[in-house]
Image (cartoon, rainbow, N blue to C red; front, side):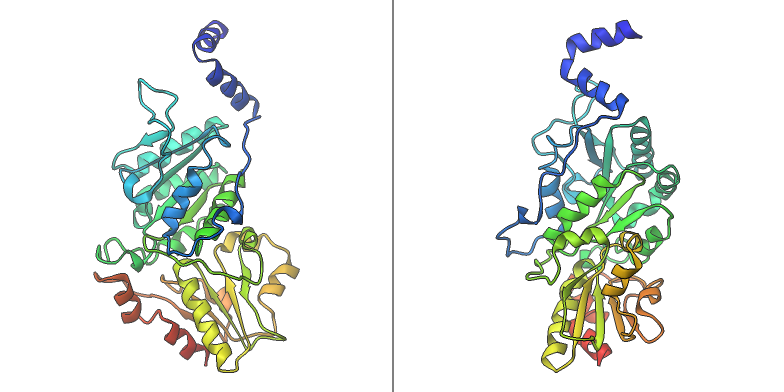
Length: 351
């Protein structure tokens, strides 16, 4: 065994050093960016696209980060642009082509994570997470450091229609014990979603990302790094709010705009970005109460998926702007309007 390793080391000295670090648990890794990574971004950028930007800053800082996709790389945007593909003739490649086999991809990632040191990530459409659910469940059960990049996260994917539009999938993933689910609302939140995923060494993380462009939510009340707390205030008011609005992902922008309209009408409004239930539940009771003040009973959640589970946070006097049925084939804006996930409907519910 030692002779074989010495032969390997003579041919691949850098890889041998890294392998030694992996075995000893001393794998290097430091998140290289913060919210200033997108300093002047004003254009709409899909969170899958901002995720790709993050991935391509991590290759040097996380030398054991290995990624791929279930035959959807060009859609999931999960490739290292400047690195080769892993293959029988190039074992140093870090882009893996899994083929159309989501469950196989999930199982392979579990094996790599179980070996230790390697941080695997894999992408597919969120709706196809169904195919890999047994592997996700085992990753959670075994506390494996696996990262799932689930894109095309809602009816916002548009014309592919209800077969490809995930309605119940985010909640079904939130139901898996030990799995951390994060749905970032803009490019800045996506940075910290990746940071949280990489720093989660006790279980798998699912990043829920959009197909459509998402505007940057500017001038947030709290720093965007508070995403790592699961929920944080993006707009607040003086004194006790009349209503608390909470949104995730692509719906946060709608929620913020509804809050602005309600403020103009004289209401006191708090708007909360709520990207991760699991991260939020790890916070102190004091922090939780600072976000969802117990005396404020009027609360509204906004998410383009089933309403199941949201009543825990909206309470008995709150309501949900949600989608308790399947989608349809049409442009994203048309679907949001048709199904009542709009600024106007949020304002109407609040009033």
